[in-house]
Amino acid sequence: MSWLTRYRIRLYLRNSLWVLPALSIPLALVTVSLLTRYEKAIGSQSQISPETARTIMSTIAGSTFTLVALVASALLVTVQMASAQITPRIIGMVYRNAYLKWGLALFVFTFTFSIGVLVRIDETVPRVASVLAGYGFLLNLALFVFFIDGVGKTLRPSSAVRAVALVGREVISNIYPSRLEKDSAAAAPIKTVSDEPGRTVLSEVDGAVLAFDLKGLVSLAEQSNCLIELVPEVGQFIADGDPLFRIYQGGDRISDERLRDSVAVGLERTLDQDPMFAFRIIVDIASKALSPAINDPTTAVLAIDQIHHLLRDIGKRSLAEGREADRNGQVRLIYRTPNWEDFVQLGTTEIRQYGDDSIQVQRRLRAMLEDLMETLPERRARILNKELALLATSSKRAFLDLDDQELAESGDLQGIGGTYDEVHDSVPPASRN
Image (cartoon, rainbow, N blue to C red; front, side, top):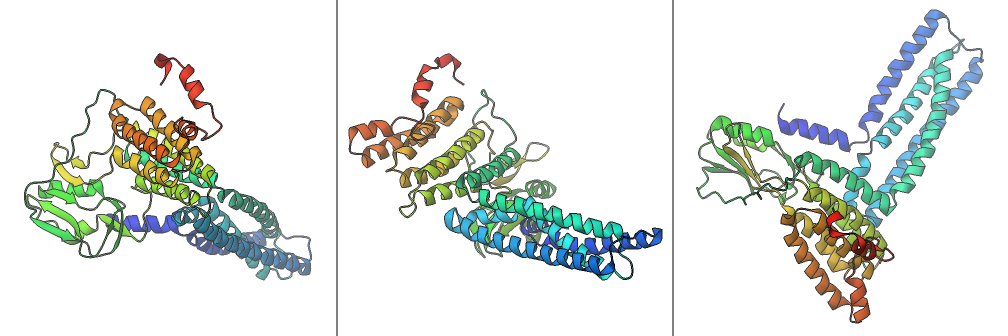
């Protein structure tokens, strides 16, 4: 099985709600069959009359099916509201919710189990199976209340941006596991290969690049003693006929199909190998909140809170250099990867533009940039200084009143209402970290 096939299977299972509920159906049928056979073998039976037991099991089955229908309806409403009020790019995270999948699976299991018990009631009633069906329904009822509570909280902007940020931090730690050493030299920029490529492998599908098999490509290049260049960056859209790979210095034994099987292309970006996508989602939430139709700068400040800590995390890590070597230290793979400047620009530019007339947003952005300059290594400061200058220009252009300009050019971790400057100025420089 190729890397691409395995990746597609994992991605499909993560993004599908129906798999666990569907598997719970045969599991429930097998469970009720084995349990009722065992009860018959040991002579276990309930004191409840068969007619009463049938009525109870019918009620449980009908009520559980109603819960399944209500959960499905609530899920559809959640997806529609999240798409309209927050951003359509957060829908994928709803379908990846493990609690939702297991909750639906338990509902379907209980429904199937109660039906199985119902059809097996004759002159006697299986005692253990009927008790399990009854208490299983009570558990489902409690889970349904918990689910409704969770759905309401999920639609809050603070919950949405935090959920995206938590996944983003996990992706960042996986993609950039090494911490940045203070005395380490900055990575040299990737130079364009001067040689003409031996051949170019074209894409045969349309879509966004989701992930690629880094170790597999390095192994292929090492076996064929060549250099492979992955042309598109993860998250970039490619069309049928666009360059996908360029092969240098040999590689004739590597088939085009094997190379294509090392890159996953899909309809929508994912967070698997794309930490920039986490920033993209949070920035989209902030941009929608700053639109004239909504005009909710506080939500934008909540988004900046998460961007702030994501940038701090990114800035303290050693970012990928876009080249991978084999065991002997020879570069075998070249690929495009975002740098520190890309992350900062994505996290600040659109919010600065759309929130240029909001003092709250201007102050929160300034506080973020100033804090990053003090807490990150000096090599990260150039783009931060540039963004501070752009922010100051934006404030002068948006606010004609000098008092408003002065207010906008003061950092505040709460946007408006915090005491960032006073506390910050009272801390001796030697004790700041």
